[in-house]
Each structure stands twice: as C-alpha cells, then as structure tokens.
Length: 441
Image (cartoon, rainbow, N blue to C red; front, side, top):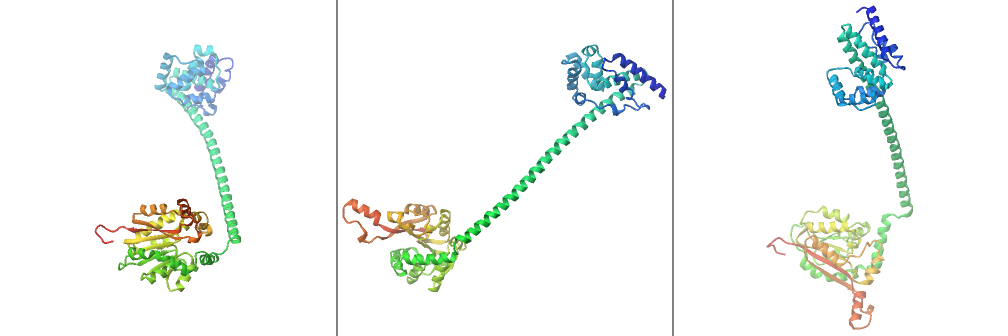
C-alpha cells in the first residue's frame, strides 16, 4: 500500500468518525490521525494511554468484560442475548476495544451519550477496521484491534506493577525501620541488663562478706548452739541398734557409710569407734578441714554431685544429721532418689532433723539457724522415703527437754501440754532398700 492510499484511508476514517462522534468527541479524529503508522505496520502506542476504567475491562475475563462494558457505556446490566453475542465474539478473537466502540456507536450508546475518556480512540480503531476491511485488508484490520488490546493490557499491567512496587517499597521500608528500632531497643536492653548486673555485683561486694567468713561463723554457731562434740556424740548412742542391724558389712563396697553434711565429724568418730568406716561430705571447707585434722576421710564437695559419681549398689548406708532442713525440696527429692540408687540391697538411710512436733522447736528454736529453710515433719519425710521404694521405714525420736522444764502435774491435760512443749526435740527417719526375692536381709 502506497503512502497516498494510506493517507486517503485515514481521511475517510476521520470523516466517518466525525459523523458518529458526539459534541465532545471532536478530538477523536485527531487522535486517530496518528493511530496507524505510515508503513501500515500497526498502531502508534504513544496515544493509547488508557484510563483505569477501560484498562481494567481489557484484562477482565470475557463474561466480566461484557458485563463491565454494558455498565460503563450503556449504564445498565447486560441482557442475556447481548451478553451471549459479545462473549461469542470475544471467544472468536474479536478486539475488546472494538466491542466497546460498537456499544458506544450503537443506537442505544449514542442515545445514552456516555463520554468515557479513552473510548474515542476505540471508536477510531473500529472505524479504521471498517475502512481496512473495505479495502481488502481484513488481516491488517484484525491485527490493529488485537494490537490495541495488547497495548491497553500492557499499560494496565505496567501501572499495576508501579503501584505494587510503591506499596512493596513502603512495606520494606516500614519493616526495615521496625527492624532498626528493634535492634536499637535490643541494644538498649542489653546495656540496661549489663548495668543492672554491674550494680548487683557492686551491691554484693559492698554488702556481703566472703564465703569463708560465713563458713567460720557457722562452725562457731555449731559449737555454741548444738553443744560440744562430746555431748553430741553421747546423744548418738540411740543409733547403736540401727548401726548393728541396718549397715551391711558386705565386701567390695565403695563405702560403708556416706555421711552427708558431716559437720564437725561427731558421727564419723562415733561409727569408727564401732568398727565402721565412713566418708564425710560437706560444702563447708572449714568443717571439712576440721574433720581431716582428726584423721577422717572428708570431702569438700556437693552431696548430690558426689552421690551421682558413685556406682549403683556401692554403699552400705547414707546418713545425714541436721541436713535435710537446709535443702530445697527438689534437691532433697533428688538426694533421696540417689541414696536409694547407690545403696546395696538391704542398705539403709538415716536422716536426723529438728522435730516440729515439739511446738517450741517448730515455732522458735528451729529459727536460731539462719540457714534453715523450713521444718520437716515425720509424716512428710516418711512418705518421701516410701515414694522412693524404701521399706521398713520408722521414726526414732530423741533429745526431749529435761524433766525440770516440764509443767508440774500428772493429769492428762498437763501430760499433753508437756508432750507438745517438752517432747523430743529431734527425730530421725530411716528406711531400707529392698532385697531381691530370696536374698538375705
């Protein structure tokens, strides 16, 4: 096609567009003048910057496009016949812009007179297709329509991507700002924690004393409040029967007796005199030093840690005098559990503690020792041993107040009062590890 022929076609399209255009459509023919390139290769995309309403329709599904086109151009819902007609044309490859123009150029469309920005160019494309088909250029006419649809669709996609990119960048920016703020707050929190720790350390250094000073104090406290070593050893005679019947003399044992919280070594001395070897365990190095000085095997270590280092069934007896009232329950629970494990079959535990059945002990003298946690009742410690499978559990009560401390009188009420106020100040619980069926106790 020569340039002269193409220009003639454009002039004819302009004339026909002017005949179909409304009063405000005078710019349609001007826009159409640049719609076809001189070489006839297709549409000039520069003028096809479509408004959002048309762009959104262009990328819609066929049925949605037809429904939207009716609402946009004719201001009503699509009727079944019209809807089926236009959907069929779309499925046959018709241009969406052309169908929009057909609706606008229809008798109803002209009567409605809706002015949609960008629709004038669609009308121009439609008229151009007519001219091209009259000239025997149907393939080019179809190409023009499809190309125009593609330009609109790409423009819609481009705008969507731009909008999405803006939202994405805003979101990323917000996230980065939040992350920076969180990092700043984290750094501030770490700095605050460090300062609190430094302050606590400073307060500890300023207001506490060295552990060895407390250890020395506790040795002096024992000497002043528990009694002399000799008086304590004298009270231990009540355990002669227990020693004779509950401490097996089996060979190949790691220890005969492990004494938890050996203190000044009164029990270590007592059992040695009766032919038993014992190892003392205490966290107070001053106490351990005093025991070692007397020739006893004493270790400055944690009791639970030490028991866990021993083989199963390697100890004849585990003892502890005035120790369990110093322990938190979870530690005491584990101590009883490990004692059962390390004991040989038929071996025994024995724990002595202040007796809260005595009201004066439970409410007053128990608290002379600042390291005491809480009184332990015979019922509570008995159940704990039973829970850990100890058998033949029993209680030994000892150290009652002297007779001169009792309320005078022989009647039942007086005796009951004296029992609560002047009864045994200590008690010990003991239990044995069960033996295998048929094995001697």
